[in-house]
Amino acid sequence: MNRRNFVGITAAGSARALAFSSQAPAPPALQYRVAFGLWINDMRNESAPLENWPYGTLDDETVNSIERALDVQREAGYNSIDLAGLLSIYAWPPGISSIATPERRKRVERIVNAAHARNMRVICFPSGVLSWGFDEIIRNDPAVRSDNRHVMNPLREEAWRWQEKVLDYVLDNFGIDGIHLESADQGRCRTPECLAKWPNDVVYHSYVTSRTAEYLRRKRNDLTLLATIQGFSAWGRDFTPEEDQALVDLSRRVDCLFDQGHNGTYVRESRRRDFISRLHCGYGTSGGLWVYPPQRWDRTRWFLPYVSRTGAHIRQLYRDGGQGVMYYQGPVANPGVEVNIAFGGRIMTDPNRESGSVLDEVIARLYQPRNSAAQRRLASIFRTAEDGYFENWDAQRIMEARKRPMPGELHLVTLFGASPNQADYLMEPYLDARGRLAYKKALVSILKQLPALRDQCDCGGRLAAIRRCVEAALVDINNIACARGETEVWDDRHVDRLF
Image (cartoon, rainbow, N blue to C red; front, top):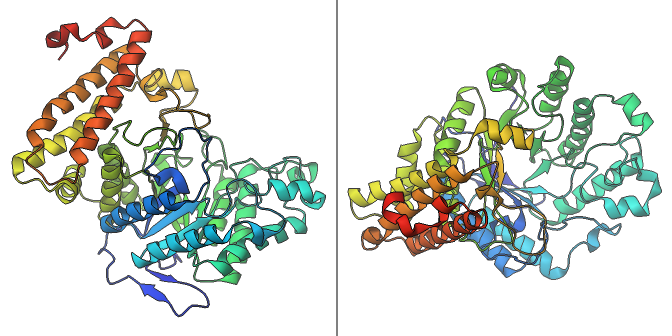
């Protein structure tokens, strides 16, 4: 397989060359250890309580939060960060270079420089492929329109010129090391001409992604190109032989294909090894399970470690030949998020390790326990929180309610809104009354353990943050239970019986 090397940072026209192969973990590390920041404020350590999603402000808090996350990421072993929204959230203007103020450009440069200083590559999602970001251009240029007001027509060369202008601006003006290619978030062009040429959606998306990748390769051969196939197909049906071949052809033009797994991966686990063996690039997922951070919530409003579950997924992915994970990030001010991020980086540097061993290493680094008893108790807190929530999911209940299986991507609240929303993750179909009671018991047991640890570790305030997270989650559970008349859950007068 002709897989490109991914061990350094270069920028065209610059004398800078930050090679970090000497610092890279020895095999069997995954090659593409991607800190998937997605939107720039997903790592923000301050909430945006009155802002609709996605929050595009790039201020000092955004930059400071990303820098703090970069410290955790690099120490844990990630070798790149993938960011959307550095310059545009929804719409590039026809005057491409007018997209950002001088202040915004300076902050973008600060983020890029901060990543490079930590020997991490910067992967950028400047726009979708012919979509996501071109709404204003589509409104102003009839020549590029399709039947979809969010998607340009790939049969119009004018559409490709606009795509290239956006890529040129980003790559010519900032020290970006790679491009995240995503074509299907807003659907596709379904004009009669496009449907006649590409009746199959997977073939269509493979073509437009391949053409964009070919342009980028001609422009700068050192770029890292990551292509996500989310939205290429419908979950649960798998790819046909024709679609497999289209993806294999696409794999000749990019460095890694990411079958992220929001509702399960398109390539079934039972045939993943065979599929990967046919590719000319790496194959990756998003780690099997992740929590999308709720931007309108206080950052210490939830406590959901998921290290055992991602660890098991990543080990099996590696054994099947996988070489990448887009590991979702979040605000490191949340101690559960911080441990998830640190765990993800470490397990990717040696996917054969057991999750418990990696968690112990993470806790030792972040919490500096003073004795083995404190180390064990801290590890127990994170396992208790994870199992107390996820072991109370019911696959059939979730499938019946969502019409799709248990999510890879868990939204604690709805994405959209103008104020902090309700705690969806604590309600059906995820938890029923019995599950809420079980999770409450787990959280109460954590609160009982925290005082004994106060003088047993040097954690930099992390234990206090865990307490705030747990208390907030308990309030949400009790409010839901009280509103629904679930007396056994919210009424603590029988505390001895319940706990």
